[in-house]
Image (cartoon, rainbow, N blue to C red; front, side, top):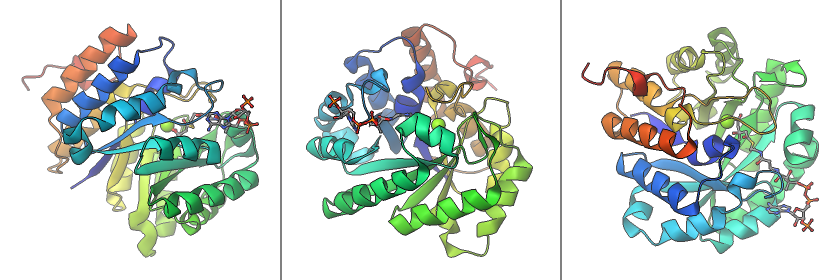
Length: 298
Ligand code: HMG
Ligand code: MG
């Protein structure tokens, strides 16, 4: 069974120009859950000045909490950059958060206004307090294969930061190709550094499809036994602090490939495609996914 983490409501929507209503976002998350998605990143407790689309995350979580069926069936999480964000998450009764550091200094400064070292110290406090509050913590590493400001990122640095994140106590590290530059050779080179390490099973891959290499990178990761992948419905997304970070790997394209390979996800693909069409009508532009444009009878 492959574990999929749907990041459309957060990583996807954070880059959309049109501000969606709280009701539409809640509906989006409910639809994803009804299609069988078990892990959904539903919002972010970040500064609304930095990411305006996430400003209503508290309202969304409070609304979602009212649906017992959804809460039972789905693991909902939120991005948290600091203790202010964690307190807001605790106030909403959240069970899982995600912290996010970067592999390049320029991106760290632009995304969270501090150095990598400062961010790790900050996250140490966040993880400690989250654990005391019985909140699970996932960790992201952005710009793991390339940075929009600094170019290629050395594999040795990424390996070190993955191990640092694990030391903080996160239950999983999602390795992010924030601007979609990775190729399978790079992915293999990084993952092989963990192939003799039992903590390999704590790694997840977060590919963006900006240059069309997303699925090829998943295939390379599958070959190295990675079973957790982040993706976003329709390929919604990007990062407001990484120019050219358009397009997370589309969830439906990923699932089509996985199911075709005989791997199980528990997701109803037809329902997912319908959500993609519905979302296009809300954001008022086409989504990059291939499957939602293809012949569904095949
Ligand atoms: P800062 O300006 O340095 O913060 O921003 P500060 O601590 O100096 O505080 C300034 C003001 O912000 C204060 O309010 C704080 O209370 C408030 P004021 O006194 O001026 O009224 N504040 C907050 N408000 C709400 N929520 C908070 C919060 N913290 C402080 N949590 C900060 C630092 C980290 C807050 C800011 O830089 C920020 O919010 N950054 C987030 C940017 C972001 O969300 N980027 C996108 C996500 S990363 C990504 O997409 C990559 C990923 O998907 C992986 C991949 O694709 O590879 C994860
Ligand atoms: Mg991303």
